Image (cartoon, rainbow, N blue to C red; front, side, top):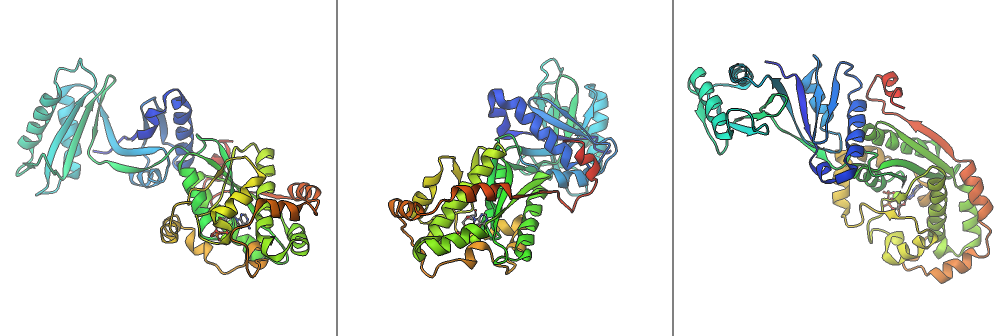
Length: 402
Ligand code: ATP
Ligand code: MG
């Protein structure tokens, strides 16, 4: 017996009330993109669940792809059968035999959503359990901890048989929560912050500050590679590379050494905010974690954050470095992040950055410099790079989605 579909359960989505249609649409689009290498697979979506109709495509490969899609609570390969008890008996036995090995235990879990079906839940369990016991020698029931849980769900249109449940990635479908700009350095933290934001349904675009010739082509390539890794999760990624040399040099020249880091961060935030406006985002994401370095004390954040009232999301704020490293390993960004190339902040890092910079002082220092035209120029000269995942093929069908 071959599975003919994968049943997808939304979990958290079902609590989203009126927004549900949008969530379902996004999830459907994201699954479609994830499965673009399987042209025969079709998606059937309804308010409370989704089916991927396999139409002969390989269920195991599709299962492994679905594991990474945000917004899926759990999923199961399934068989649709006519609601005729004899037909169902045969299908149950077929499916069971394809999974059964001598010594394995089982139970039947019936569910009757269609109350017109002649058997109630207990009767479903008994009828089909007895049918399996009669047809398979030595088979034993174990209701507490069965090796095979034969789930039979009777719905209005048909009955569905499933035996295996896979845990989904959870979260919300990418794009269902709006768009935000991720400040992406070459470090370990910001790619993790981007990943976690996508998991909560954000569409993420990345902004990177680059200061040639102080930062090399290789350090830029590192960030492109990180963005490419993140694009494997979302299907695509836009990276904005901001030329930052002129502003950094001016800061070095005009601002007292112990305040250069604070002013630099404020300028990065202002430019990111301009890009956010230009490209219609609603928030900024950083990889900051409280107290990790001088720029990430609460005093620093208070002073740096003064330049914008756009929400600044910091998904890592309460995480320890070891936890962040753990996630970076899981998502495959770690080994790229630890490549040794310098980034613009490390090149210009002062010997003793202030850990408690004050708003009045920083405003005073900045008042001597006219940053406006430089910010405008940096935004205008920003390089826009559209990145797609390399690991997966069939770019053509992917393009059709846009
Ligand atoms: P990361 O590992 O993400 O680099 P970090 O612990 O090294 O973080 P900082 O270097 O202080 O911390 O950077 C804090 C945050 O500022 C980063 O997580 C990132 O969001 C942003 N950031 C730093 N440098 C850049 C840059 N060159 N371009 C874009 N964003 C940056
Ligand atoms: Mg860094």
